[in-house]
Amino acid sequence: MVYLDRIYTKSGDAGETSLGDGTRVRKTHQRIAAFGAVDEVNAVLGVVIALGNLASDMQARLRHIQNDLFDLGADLCIPEREGKQDFEPLRMTADQVQQLEHWIDAETEKLEPLRSFILPGGTPAAALLHQARTVCRRSETTVYHLAETEPVNVHATTYLNRLSDLLFVMARIANDQGRSDIAWVPGEHRQTD
Image (tube, rainbow, N blue to C red; front, side):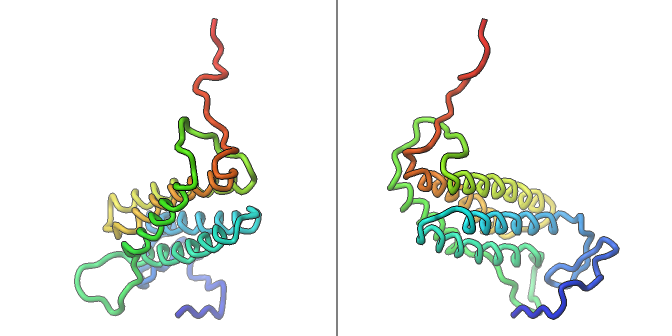
């Protein structure tokens, strides 16, 4: 249970902060960057929900995902350790990844197959979902940078990978089930002599 009675503590004024297990690290530590990037994805999804004029089922799924992203941040803020710990850290699960895969499959059935890459945009909701997708991809890269130096739960990185795929599919759904997608035309504006 989280209990916050004060928002500022002054404990980070010298450039350090605490991880979920109490370990103090520099605010520039890759782990801080990783769960900060996940928080950014969550904030962008909040904008999508607030401004996107989405169908109720898509809004409900995005709220579900926002909660999962807090789970992911909690997972990343406590380093994986061998042996017994004082408490059981919250970790992402295969079930959370499988839920995203289920949604991707269900939504993809509503769409015509792509014959070209598509440009981010279309309806405001689709454009916002594309923005969320790109922030999610960057977040995934940031978490992989952490995984190069420290153990990271494999379900954390897999979740972000599937989430960016789902956001792409959701953007197409928000573009009148792909009918308003804007196709990329390779080399369309190149100068030729």
